[in-house]
Length: 471
Image (cartoon, rainbow, N blue to C red; front, side, top):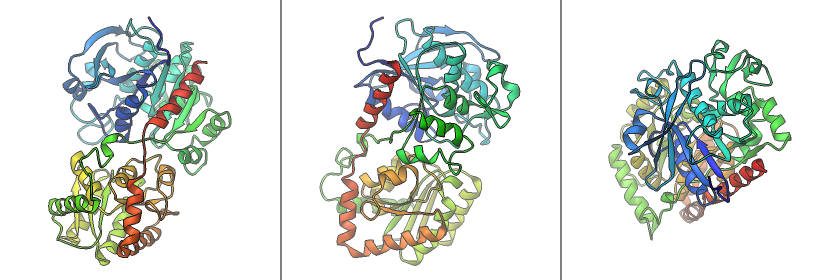
């Protein structure tokens, strides 16, 4: 087995845009390995969901992996992305071959066997690290992502496997918490159920296992890396995360966006006012809005409390009063979806709402809007504010996490310090004032479009951490 001069990395994820996705993790899982491939021999491990098997093409079985506790045995398949990145697939029909979502059933409830489903993913990663997977390839590093693969770090420790692991926390609010009675079913030793282990307020936490056992932790922005060591943002893990930070084992590495968000790459050369106007006309027509010379605001978001959607609904009244329009796309909490529908009914022709998500339409919303509302109560990184700036839409956002790290207040967007309706309305008034100034608005738009959020630097920093862990 010939060693790769820059290391072999197994990137373990529960979703990837190429095949199956519910959120930003899928986009990162598609883009980061592609940036890493110039620096490492990177391969991806994902569950064999029905959607994955329908889209990935030929898959060759390279290994059979044993069960453990109540975790069933599985086969390990190997396929590849269209551009040639090797992808290992955990083939276990009883866990993954089903209708519905990746984490939720058709009624929006957690799959009752999610602990087994993602313990199987984590165990497969540990099996591959131990040399039980592809006979022609064994990783030097494992890169884990969020709670669905975090338990891998525990399995490595309990087996005394010395393969170094890095866990990226994309959103600390989702921790994979289950009843302690599931320890045996998941093959977790009783001795691990303690504060220095997997125990989390009397329950079992997959993410806590990763935070405790992984060799290094990263989050997706430098500000969020600091925030999660505080009680306000630490979700009960701030003490342990603070210890990791003091030990030099917690880093903030900002996510990037791929080249498809370069206006020139997307075919938007030349006069930005012209192509933005064309997209604005399309979006107004698609959402049933009246023709208008006023600013067009957009929300492209999960409709959940974290994203400050309730604050945006309040601000929408002010937007309409001042002569602006708003288009919204997303889905999430039923009460917020219904509130958005009622907002559109109250302001027909000025507010358009689409419950659901269409990627191409979302791109046209970034391209056609003048401003993007992102009043998130917390935001580990955020990608929409990067997409918006590249396409000349100025984000209006709460100064938190990756929003604080990627938006220059008064130059490429607008930041406010407290997630409240009043502060958001003040920021919206600033946006209207700039829009009416003409020249200043044009300068801000040009500055936003000049921003670069490339993956290259982030990939380099990850590669340095891999190398240090191997050393």
